[in-house]
Image (cartoon, rainbow over all chains, first blue to last red; front, side):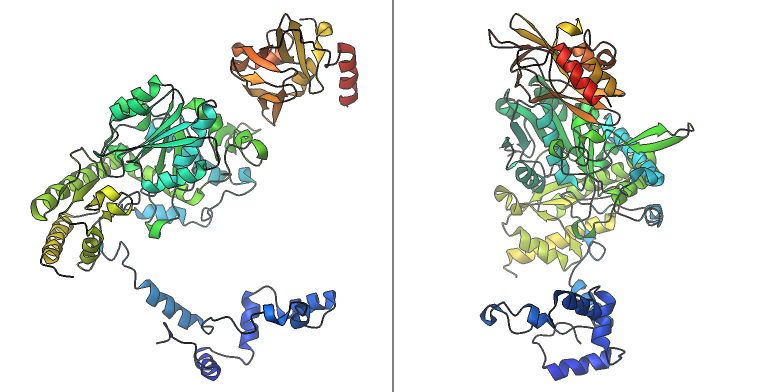
Length: 489
Length: 128
């Protein structure tokens, strides 16, 4: 076993290992280096000759010996391709990915089913790039795909305009807030509910740190933003209000009441939403959102240990000139044939750098394409069925866990596919770790972000979860809790 | 308005003083240079503007140009019809296509701006 070598071996031993495991020629080190490093030994010689020194040592001679490392870096010996893949596989085997244990994890990234048509199309060599080419109009196929993505996002959100995507949900929230600040140039206060994803709030705080803006978080002790609390907090200086629906605890927000409070103060209403939820819930544009943003991972992108993901952003027409990122428009060429162009580029960094609205000047093309293919494959009926399955299974899970597992609902609120439960213990991380060994990722510990929720965790249930899996989770949780009550490790 | 009675900035805005209010627009030369105006961004009434500083933008199919204020003061009125329909600027830059009215300090003059004749010389030198 070559992986996990504890101490560097003696040089001779290293060399013998190399000779045994590499199909060798005598100059393998040089040839290997030359194969992967463009700076070859003959290149180095040519450069040294041009400078007029005979060796690299001579080049660095002016640096005093006392300032040099004077030994090799403390790194393990170079490995052959075979050794390296064995080593990496051994490391990777330490993970328990969503495919290896039953996944009830949520918090922005969800284990939804991905129809194989998504990989089949997104994997085509014409599309398989993360970037829009620099001469964008030369890639009509990519632009058409983004235009269709934008059109689908407009239908999904009930809003007028969608850009060709951002990087992920958190920066989507931050970009939406900056749009609102630009649109309401004399107002500087930003209100955000505590029930918005804590990491999105951190991203937002980072974006705003050096801007003229005051970020105020409104507490949500009952698991949702009380419209009366918003009414008491909002002022004439409020540029925008940010909520998440369904929120980080899984609870639904009172979006229409919140929208009316925001409208009364002529502030911008920003909603971070779950795209799948629009199969059963109202669309953001229908309940008064001015800007809707979302993490688009749920639309055909793998969990992938946290990324890369997809930032969705759509808005009412009046905000289009504040919208960051690329926007694809439909037009006709000189022969009257339908074609696509990047449009309204005056908003963008490459036209007027000093007045750019954002440092986003590209899009998450590959994942926007995946989302477009996913939505097209499901269709409105498929999206509705997916959402209904998530909702029904999540409610079955909530009932089952409460009946059988000594957990109770933390918030008495309606929810969609995710809910927060609490236990008679503040050792939730230990509980959840213990359940992994029974084959379940049971949920996300809330104490990590909310000190007042040390006894709580969220459980997300997608259409992929079966009744058997949910019943199994209930049993595993119950067994683990009883084990812990008896003082077990 | 008669172009000959107006004063002009080097950046092709015109100004006309009446009492304490200066009406601002862009010259016909500038309007002719701007092909296909798609959008115009103007300040709001009550905003402060400063001489030689950008107070708005004109966006065309090909480019975006800043609008520079010829005077300092407070915006008293904005030509919303022109903002909504930029063709007004193109077709009647000295008339219905005016942009903003700026209230200036009492006793202000437009002496720092060019006369019509001087502006024509500038245009002649830029036209080719």
